[in-house]
Amino acid sequence: MTNSSQTTVAGSAVPMIAIKDMWKRYGRLDVLKGIDLDVPRGSVTCLIGPSGSGKSTLLRCVNHLEQINSGRVEVDGELIGYKEKDGKLYEISEKDAAKQRLDIGMVFQHFNLFTHRTVLENIIEAPIQVKGESKAEATKHARELLERVGLASKENAYPIQLSGGQQQRVAIARALAMRPKLMLFDEPTSALDPELVGEVLGVMRKLADEGMTMLVVTHEMGFAREVADTVVFMDGGVVVESGPAREVITNPQQERTQEFLSSLL
Image (tube, rainbow, N blue to C red):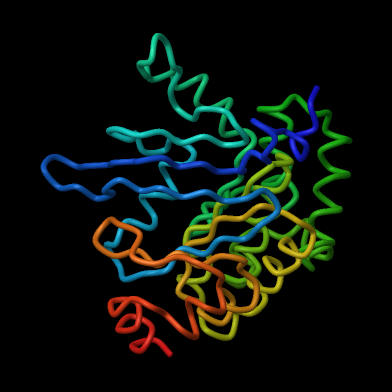
């Protein structure tokens, strides 16, 4: 089996995410209009922009939670949601799409934890049921992950006993339990009280330091500036500006980017 970090095409490293001319519409409304975006492996890319600009939709298209209308999305060189035959794309079955998602972790705004299960039970559920790991193996890995997110003492707690920040850290551990090659974060701190945001961003910083490829929709400009390799500003379903994080945030070139950032910073 080829090591994914060494996968190459025509001598160049294959990006972890490659989006080409992606369109997404609901009825007559074009939500994404010809998006082109590459996310190199081991990098952090932050999507920023006003509400309704298409950021979350783009994220959901990466793991085929949303069907695209045209274009293509590849993760680690594999076409997502479709198969290609004679130059045409055909949608794959939901079962096959679910298999592709096993390698893609996703953390949402809301934590979606099972309220009737403990923290540990929440984390080991999918590895056991979906990947067929033994309970002992899944439990060992879950405890390692809880250590990483600073919640080793909470394995027997129920979600209702945790703060929002703690629940979101459990949600991150649950996603990591599937040993994904890519992590998608959809505004993971937007539902949190301000004083709890830092603990979740701290876990994400550690993941970035460990080399996890991450695509993050966020309004946290400090995080984007300090942690992201690339910042992509979207508005109206298009990429208005993208580039090195600090450059885009501190010296944006496009007037629309300048307007948006001046309203936040």
